[in-house]
Length: 405
Ligand code: AMP
Ligand code: MG
Image 1: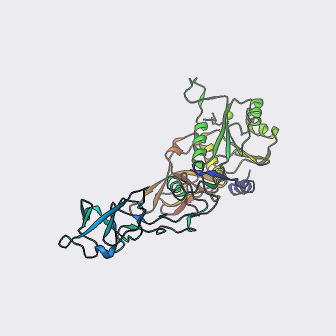
Image 2: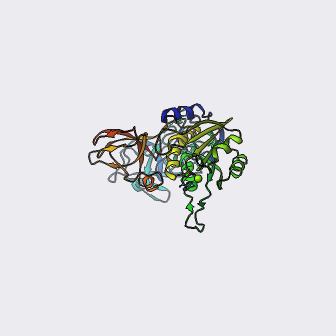
Image 3: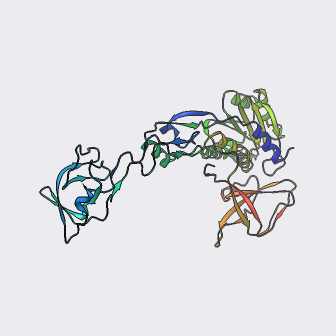
């Protein structure tokens, strides 16, 4: 048996480099940038009006007020999409809409609310300062400005920003392809009828969701009974960056995942870690493909996924290797009475004076899914270790929305 840190070292040494591809921005959404993006155009692209109103020359309207209004001749219009082609002369005004290009010669916009128009003559009732209500070319950013940093996730606002400057393609990390293989003769798929001695499969949907959340691509999902040949065949027929098997990885007579992986050419890198839950975790590699034999117990499977597999999936999409953590203080003593390091599932609650209190879920059995569904993350305590009330510790968070570094 190896330690948690030894297991992490081994997984780290075997992570392949991320694959960078060029994607259309449509396909790049929800992925992470593999390059810095600089502006090919300024924003705004051209000087335009911030308001519906009249584009004028400041020297013509300076001093206008309800008591001494100024009258100008309306000589044309600049509409969004249809700019005024000419140049404004002394005493002229141009009707202008929000976002429309400022006509040559104009330096100020008077909002509709401060005007009255009749027979192509506009009365200016107020003018506060030169340049009012104009958005200048490049005032947000200039050509060459850094818009998005490498490792930024392309969510809705980032996709919009790329589209707004005419970028159609970006380099992003290819999500790794993950194959799921759930093993167990006792398992019944969600929705199917069940006998008294059978178990409902909860690992499949759990892993699918966790992989999607981590940014992986699910390329196949299979369920097999505890039969060696069926397990061998299921691994053989799939090509994946990562194989995630659950169940059948212990010392039982019907546990075939390790053998099936090795028959298929995977070389074992470790089996069994001094930890609770998740002791039987198995890790193997064949060229660039990695295979994890997660324990069958849903809690053990999820803890192994979160601590060992998720960092690999997230690093392959371009995030730094590691876990998101949140610091908190124990609300009361938390003790590991066991002989192995314990990944104790905990809740985080806001403290009135800031920060978080940490409390542990009472029922921590590796078959008890409520210990996960009620938890925000987990802490790791060594054998016999007591985390005293008020002591600070980092919680490994299940939620891993992270900023790029
Ligand atoms: P195993 O690792 O195959 O010995 O399974 C350990 C325990 O986890 C057994 O009680 C199994 O019934 C249970 N188990 C295995 N696979 C699943 C699954 N996909 N969903 C829910 N429970 C499972
Ligand atoms: Mg089994």
